[in-house]
Image (cartoon, rainbow, N blue to C red; front, side):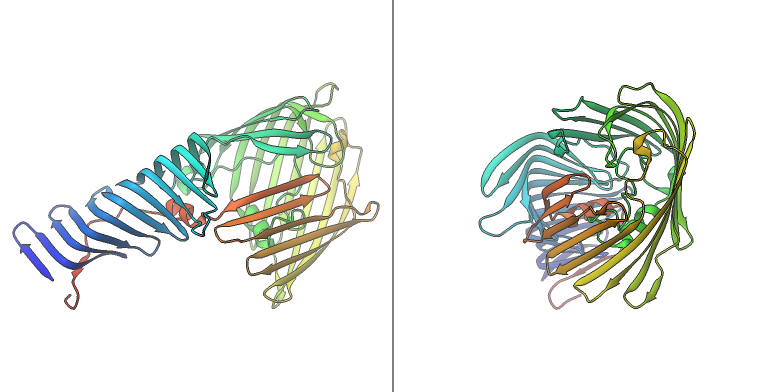
Length: 484
């Protein structure tokens, strides 16, 4: 309603109901001072609101300064809303690529009683890189549970972070703990280390160093090469019930891969259903290539390893694995084919090979129900060097049902084998309940039983993964009620 303008100094002193628009960001305040000299500076006080397509802020005062390297600023007594999440902070400092929240607390749950909240002496977000919480406090149903000195979350698929050990359960081994971490040394080099301890087994360790041959300028994440000791075909829609659609299988296989790795392991247990013995690798040299192939995808993993089973002598051998998906063609509305071809070749004391053909379909009965089925057939030649080289299930079919009603998700899958008959029920159920999503996954074949709760903070992490604050200082629009 009132404005004092100094044209020579290019300053504006605005009072009473001021609205400033900068690109897609709108600032509303009772008082705004603008200095549009060499770099744009905006200071706002008296009930400040910032409205952005991705977030909103209420604060006592806000200062923005747009320089050549991006946006600088500060906020006092700020309340930041991102999707369903709200973050309160005594102060917020903003630098290009970094937001720092002091004495912060927040949650995505606002029902009474509040299910959970998080607090931190300082919460630092480096956009597209990582988020660091110092003195992270966790409160559940109003009761303080624990304070963690420091916790880092990766916002970059190539990023490093300190993961905490996770509890697990294994067939014949009982309850134990597993820990896996990744460390990045450059845009193309990634170190993975892991350890596991279960009372009935000897401690297990593994380490691998992966070097991506994809140019760093392509901004592709460094993907760790495939292991031959874990669940085979873990990317398959008909292999894991927690993959909700065939598209998730295709997205995984179409990621560009061109990498070499070197690693070693001690006392690894397989997750293949064929042997309870442990394996150790004195050396594991791998080359992996994969990505798009027309409308489909391919993945080839070749390795030379010096391995031993249990207490037997170590033996060197070569292993070749290949996957090809020609695509998921749509036959008619709501009906897709889901084919996949697999090959495994093991060259040690002799040659052992297997070929597997999968041909499945998925159809959407309606917006809530999808059904799918898959037939698979295998041809094998030669004698396996290790029991774990063989496929557990060779000829049969899978059937699968996926249901979604509002926030309730339920998937069940069953497998029939010509020799084993019905043998592998697997199901997942999850329920969106406000700010959290509890889930349960059961896989009888691998004796994998997981119960967990997902905090629905995807809006926050998506914003800070993709946010770009490197805007130049131009294009400001100032208005007050009834006057542009």
